[in-house]
Image 1 (spheres, rainbow, N blue to C red):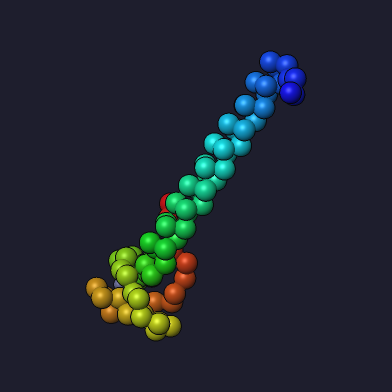
Image 2 (cartoon, rainbow, N blue to C red):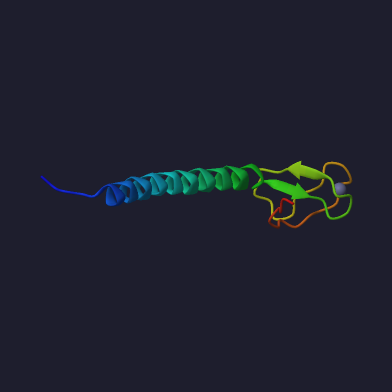
Length: 79
Ligand SMILES: [Zn+2]
């Protein structure tokens, strides 16, 4: 039988608990960021009228549905 003092036992339990919590936290955060990036991947903000629209086509210069100007694809940034 392995003899372990109460202090060491508490330390082991705390270390395991914190490792599980940290792993779950990192996993959920990584999943949330991935969903967020996927949600704004096709979103484009018009440079002329600031209208935001979704464009799933592969055109290099999508046309704004409101004002008709051509827009470059650039990464959409959330605030
Ligand atoms: Zn526009």
